[in-house]
Length: 213
Image (cartoon, rainbow, N blue to C red; front, side):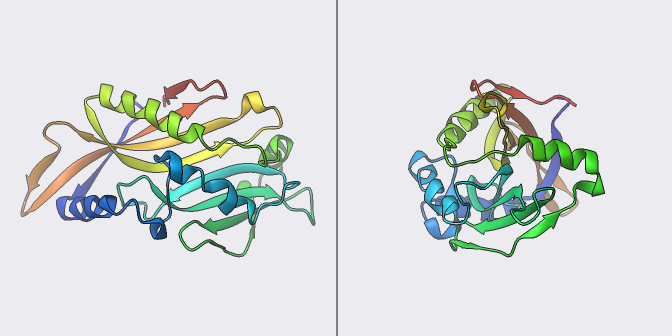
C-alpha cells in the first residue's frame, strides 16, 4: 500500500457526507459518475461548451468538495489548446450542477516550455469520447479497494488524459478508502476517522491498476 495516502477526518464531517450521499439522486448537486444514467448526461453538458474541433489535453472531474466522500462531481476542468494561440493552453471550468462555464484562463505548466510542448502534442478532440467507461473503471478500482480491507468511500478525483492515439488515452482516479475495522478512534475529546487515498490508472484496454510511488 505504498501509494496510499492516509488522512483523518472528524466523524461529524463523515456523517454530513453520508447524508449528502443519500441525496446523490439530486442532479442539482452535479453528476454522479458512479451511476450509468447520470454519466449519460455528460456529453450534452460538456459539448455545450467544448466545440467539436477543440483540441483537449485533459479533463478533470472534482466533487462538490475535496473533503466530501461522494461520487457526485460538481465540476469538470478542461485543458485545451488556445484557438487564438495554438502554442498555448487554456483551461475552462464547467459547473455540472449549475450547467454554466467559468471564464477561461491560461495554463502555464510551471512555465516549462518542454512540458507545454509535450502536452500540445497529445491534444485531441473529445467529440467521440466514451464517458461510460468511467463507471467500469471505478467499479474495477472499487474491487481493489475492497481487497485492501477498505470500504470504498467515494471518488476524490477523476481525470482523463487525452492523446491523439486513442490507444494511449489514460484515466486517472483517486478513491477514498475507509478501514473495515478500527477506522474511528477517540483522540482527546474528538472522534477521528482515518481514510486513505488510493490512486489508480486505467488504460484504453480497460486494465485498472493501483499506482506505485
